Image (cartoon, rainbow, N blue to C red; front, side, top):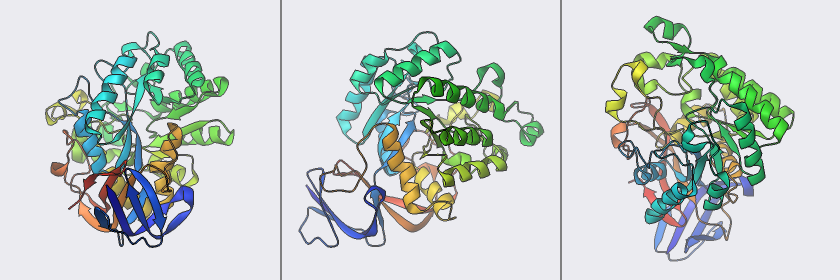
Amino acid sequence: MKILIKSGRVIDPLNNIDRQMDILIENGLITEVKASIEIIADKEINAENLWVVPGLIDVHVHLREPGFEHKETINTGSLSAVKGGFTTICCMPNTKPAIDNAEVVEYINNKVGETQTINLKVIGSITKNQDGQEMSDAEGMHRAGICAISEDGKTLMDIELFKKAMVKAKELDIPIMSHCEDHAIVGRGAMHEGIVAKGIGIEGISRTVEDNIVSRDINLASKIGAKLHICHISSKNSVELVREAKQRNQPVTAEVCPHHFTLTDKEVKIWGTNAKMNPPLRGKEDIEAIIEGLKDGTVDIIATDHAPHTDEEKNVKFSEAPFGIVGLETAWSICMTELVEKGVLSPIQLIEKMSINPAKLIGMDEPKLSVGKKANITIINPNESYKINKYEFVSKSKNTPFHGREVKGRVVYTIVNGEIRYSYS
């Protein structure tokens, strides 16, 4: 199978390329990258006025399978991801059973191998059944191919056990990904603690709930020398804690989700439970701090924290609804609209945060558009504006606060290992 991409604006940060070029793909690999390629291909893509970039990578996705297939499956989540321009995603371990042993890792690898829709990396749980009591078999899971360990959805409050996990992660040379939430003080908080929560009578979640654990985990990782990745930062103080750690040359990375630099807690009054996520939407000053962190490199990665829930699960009292929103199909357009269009990041900087830096975190091969590399490529129309429509999502779940939002920048092709896995028409 030969695919020829003609006349696209190739934006390739690692090769320092940003100019119009052609790319030829043969048998899954990039075989030519030139100003002009004249050849008869099985499929020719006219990429004039389109961006051709290294495939997007999302290091924080909840696929729900096994155990919660009514929300999402590996197949529907993968289809949702490629529609969003992602060629690689990493699935979190809070499934049922939890991803806490090699057998579950192999089950997931086998399931994705049946369709070959996307490159899928598995994140193993830190403790058995994510119950915070006993370490999972990290070595066995590592042999089965996990790229990191995490207790995401929960925080491991047992400091000695978390230290052991950090030591093990360091031995295996994989990152430990931290969901930062102080269970000792969070109580029954359901949204950001502030004027909005007080006005509508919902118990709040303070910034301290997040900041305490960010500080704790940075300090622990500093002593142990582990690679620490802070998930879904939402607080201005947490951004500063990461910045200070980086200034000390500590190997800490951090991610932020599109909703946390786009929406404030006021959205709860509009979207109800579809604006309920953990950590919660916070205040304008937090958005400003996150944007500054994106600009100065404190925040390395943009991830979705794609967390599907059914309408039935969300259509309950706010305090009883599950946390989380879907994000795979909206992430690129939200980022392009809020960051590139507003001059916060250049196209190259956005690609670094959605492809290059995620690959570094999980130890993947460098995402370059170079001869001999696997053809994992996203093609984008940067000029197309459209309204997000949740009823067009291929995800099983539609829980989003972005429905009806006007955005710019549409994914038009996603090529995974040389195969077109999504095309917009």
